[in-house]
Length: 407
Image 1 (cartoon, rainbow, N blue to C red):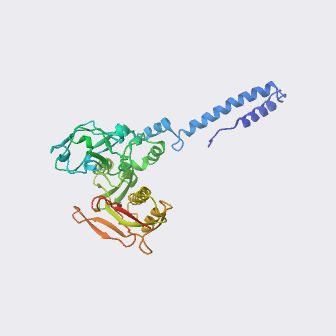
Image 2 (cartoon, helix red, strand yellow; image 1 turned 45 degrees about the vertical axis):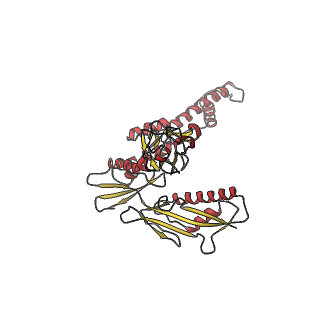
Image 3 (cartoon, one colour; image 1 turned 135 degrees about the vertical axis):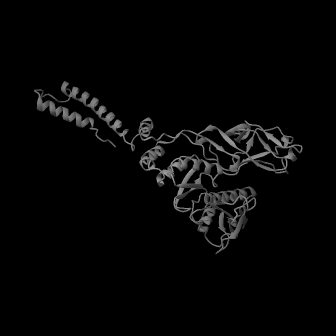
């Protein structure tokens, strides 16, 4: 929206009026030299006004873009965040090698498997699609059938981010049973910490909040320090969580679970802005697992392939709903039912009247947090302020969300 600019028509009219009023020139009819000169001059002045208006807009945070926003940020001591690769460590337990027919020793002549650095893992065959690399050599123990590994994307930016169970191909062939392709790879959840150069919108937000953030250790400063770490989608600050002089920061990751490395990175970032005598602690929410079993009633008989496709689509919809619940957000049974019914017009119903799900469980960490206890739900579940729900992937068997079909 123009701040000061005048239109060419107004400038043209003002010029003709001034000429007639203040000179002896009276001929300003169409085709006259006076009118032609005024028209040319008004066009030039109009373009100058427009350029001046654009330059003025670039001097304000709300209107500045690109390098002009960078200039403002530099004056405020806020640098634009650069591009980063997507990466996962072994402790995050997201990317794993595994075998379905025993142990790694069973597919490699009783020996451990050495996967060298530089091994390519990808989302499509023959190293195509989105590609990741194993950054250093890892040893797959002969007596195990699953081993988590670190990976790093070859390209940087958010184009390297991938969904769950899509990183399923690798180019490693140096093991005995390679012809049967028994050494497999997958990522159990999405990888979403790759980042392009920070957008103007995000950068503008951080600049606008720099005055508050520069005061250190206030809520704005803490949240900004957490949000600049790749992989963080939100942060909740809990003042006095462990008494006077303390506060906790609950991290919500771009993945269903919060990786250990993300907690460390956020802790390091927040330590730089915390005041003396104030002790911050970054932690993940208390993770509550969910599993369920349901029976779908279909309107008509369908082929085995279509039935499998409907079940898979319904399962994916429910998983997405549960995993995307916010910290402290309630699990609503009717919402699960709605997600299932909206999957396909072939689905007539789910469950029976008054009991849409055959079973619904939550899995809570034990007091020692070395295992989980299972509780049966008969209605919605309202988590505590520091709890986050996700689909249970460890204590609910291989199919935590299970749907069956009846007619």
